[in-house]
Length: 414
Image 1 (cartoon, rainbow, N blue to C red):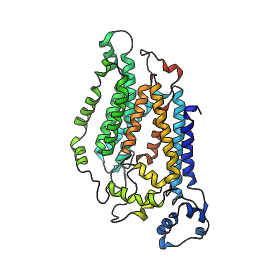
Image 2 (cartoon, rainbow, N blue to C red):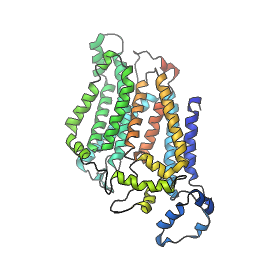
Image 3 (cartoon, one colour):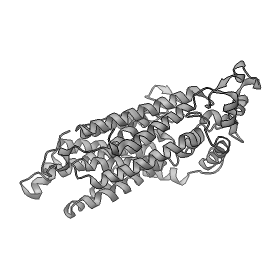
Image 4 (cartoon, helix red, strand yellow):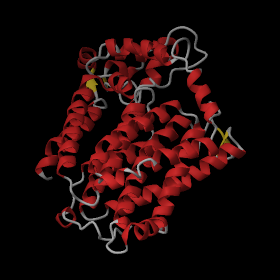
């Protein structure tokens, strides 16, 4: 473990250990002291309110140990991938890894678009799912949007790096440089992958996904534009122009605008109402939370009013983490986040390698997810969690010494 990673890695491990502590069996007296409302929730959920013989023995802090175990395993998988990807990026695997994500995004987006066109209510065109609104391999379009707002900026980062590499090859002047870029197969398929993923995101009609991608694009542009030469900045209009073309010809802007116009934040099922009804959980479980992955079960007790719709998620990643983890999980998670952001900024200032643009794409992706998480909890999905771990590794990776002084004319291989 190298010094820049020590604080980050230690706090990440502590956050997982804190989640694991929610599974530790405790004597009833200790459990009631640390989480006095846990027994009340369990009693309310039992048929007839009867207690079992175990009630006089030891019980974990989590109100649903099975769901907490699943959540912890997802977190462990994401952390392991974070460490592995970080090590592989230091071994020169960064560009190939990012390119593979682009290939996956190309395939998944094509499948999602075909599924929406042929059988919008069936997952993979075969199975019915609760809610009847699947998209691609996800049962919820907002969760698919979470994956896409991570994959799209990473792909664009690969694309910018490749374009600059091809354009900077010596000899031939500007016209030949443009011909090299336009005729490069890698530039073409990366452009196609980014366009297809953007199409899939817009077709999903996910408002939070569009807002998250826009936030990521603004942050990525603010970081990357100062590193471009004046002659290169004149070509920046191609990116927003391409996005407008995709939106105008391959999606339904009117349907998306209508979704924003009809956005409901009040009333049954509205996000503000869900957030309001989540606050009592924070009040009753401030120290230890209800247990990772137990929000849905807790809301069976705490949800008020009409139960035509069950609040199975908080529609806010931060609020749900606070409800499920309390200070026990929240404090090390917050410290790890601060350490991560500080490390990203430190790496960004010192990065003069050829992979700088992939790092910018990763930072834009993380910004997009952080923004979307104000309205969604897409990182609960294992596929999104592990991709998040991969992209986080790219954002903080340490370039190889040989990469720091890569000539601008050097060929970038994928």
